Length: 76
Image (cartoon, rainbow, N blue to C red; front, side, top):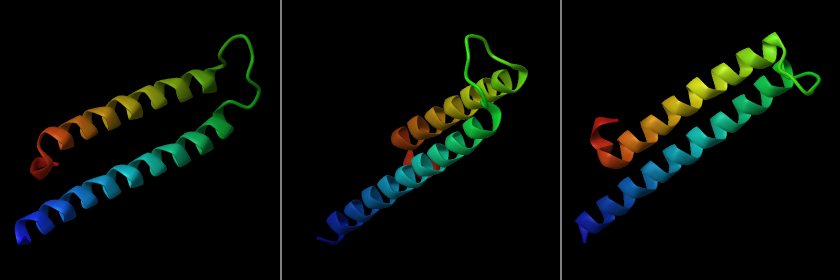
């Protein structure tokens, strides 16, 4: 029974960490988008290009981290 409880708690912690990371990414994305993309149009300005580059880096890093944690939660 104790091992089932520990497994449940670990799963819960992982899900909460994932939820918190997603919330953080969403908030950062909203703030950065509002600051960098002031007038969406047919082409990207310099700040919009920087926003896209930063967003791609953060997204790739986030996805890699989530995949790493799912494979081996004790290493994350």
